[in-house]
Image 1 (cartoon, rainbow, N blue to C red):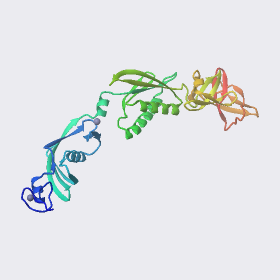
Image 2 (image 1 turned 60 degrees about the vertical axis):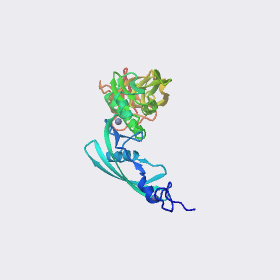
Image 3 (image 1 turned 180 degrees about the vertical axis):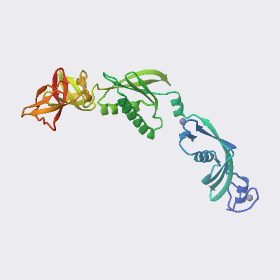
Image 4 (image 1 turned 90 degrees about the vertical axis):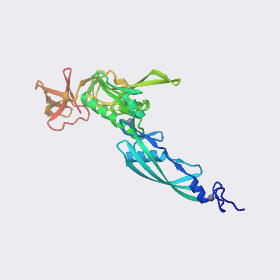
Length: 342
Ligand SMILES: [Zn+2]
Ligand SMILES: [Zn+2]
């Protein structure tokens, strides 16, 4: 069966009832709009492309939105687009597109032009930050005493590192506010799960206790929206300090999220206690309270030292396994008694 072109009558293969020449001459396969808007976040400079905020270069963004704006006739398949971008000024870019298409067994080339206009906007993330958006607060406090400046700095930088790590995976993770308050630091975070992970991480690192509480803030689309606060309470003692526990001085040798290792200074016996059992413990000697005492003589069971304050001679019973190294020993004075430190 022979076919012919309905327009010119030429016999041969036809495309939608037209011969190749008439089909090509009477059809456009692509169309570009006069202009396309490209929205850039004013704050973080990211671009809105295909409904998503993306971190790409201006040139990539212009090419992407111009290409996306191209309308293609049904049945045609774009195989390649070559683009030339010419800035008219800082906000307007002329884009010429050489489009290569296939339609049935035909190869077609067309040229389209559009103007990409750069517009300022604010991405969802920045608008949340600008509006001080937060879902969760981490409150860091010392149990009895105030946190030192060095402690605060260390804690804040641990939080910042963790948030940065999370942000590399998900850009909705951020700190909206960091605030020094009496007794500690408050960190406002964009995500409850992130705040939870960080709180527990701090607990593990510093032997802290975490208390979680939530308040209903509002209802959104029939759903309750909660704000969750994590109270991270650091223990009242630090490693290397001496605490009073069950009426006796103990040296703190290590702290984990649930347990603390101690050495009883009376007999130098090690002890592992749950942090909860040490809530009442009181620090009686900080690191700077540990003194050096000159050793005068030593026997199998005792060591004779000079009192670092009164210079009187004091006899101390040596706890099991205690060894004198050098001409001094480390001691702590507490309630008229002198304790040897391991
Ligand atoms: Zn024809
Ligand atoms: Zn932004």
